[in-house]
Image (cartoon, rainbow, N blue to C red; front, side, top):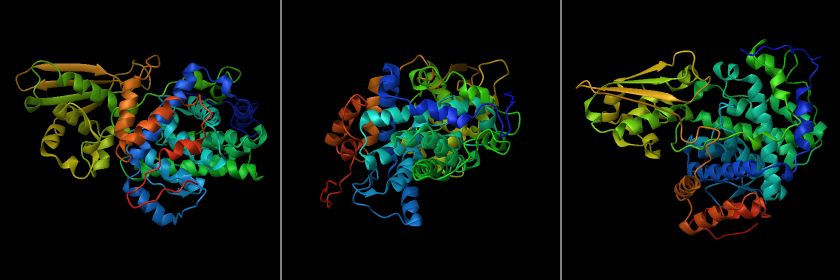
Length: 474
């Protein structure tokens, strides 16, 4: 368990200023081929899933409740041709990016970095006229902050029930937005300190509409924090390590390692070495290992889903609190049920978007198989915080099938298959865009970020025009 030796306001390491000094100096030349591929994948994957998620019913409810109005020179609301102020576009598009739980992940963060960073940088980038290289550098800056904070806070932060995507992510958004606004290191530290007071999101709301709201709110609040810092707002740059600051309050004294957050700041950006596996299934990444194992078993000679007597799923204990759900209260709950997604994979060979729509979770065959599933924690001694799962199935005739798998592309040295990424983008974006626009947007993203195109030019390709709409280019 991490230990803390610096919990007071007089700590020898001023974390936010140290991080701010590092990321304020970033340039596009600091991003190597790995980092540029990571950024390109992040923008392609996230923009695709956000377009697919733009029809999420919760977005309409948010627009109505918040009274969001159009702004001619604002930022695009995905799924429409309408523009609103950047703060509002960040909110709505952040929700869309996470609504399907189809966005990328990061094992150190225990969350979803790109669903946070991409909507924020597209919204603010469109407002400021930023170029692709500008937002790539800003992505790397925000990513650095998120992952470094996660190094020092997890797994305790995650285990306590916080949703790191939003609690940690909002600070990273502020860092990315500050970099895009070209704030000084001093003002960047203030932006992150303001964002500390916006950190929110608990795992109790997983499997409901509110989970994606965590992301939308954090995107909006991170951008707001940077804008406030730019306007001269004040905050405590020691808001992390103060005795009543983020580290102690959110993790408890002794359950974090502030040294890990600032270790190696003189090295290359973490975007040059970290990895964000993309999802092939629109559900919690913690369930993907079990899905892959179930699919492997289903392909085995002699397997028959109608003859299954018992299913045992063994996963890392960190996966259990939010994925052991034998009973579903709504279709969205299935995204966080090992029992449900494994049963669907055994019955159909995959897990599809439709499995989380409407009354899909009431399917009789799925419910019958779910009743035979038992979920257990893996024995101590394995790799800590692993996403690997073992599925063991016994049929009524005594035949046993076993498979152990991790999520697709979960190993840091496994690059994303470009064909899979492109197919996923086409499938997602094609839910709202005509085929020619999907192709044009995909081609533009293939050149990202090594192009001089602006964010506004990119987002024009993502506009969704209804038959009765006349296109107006701001």
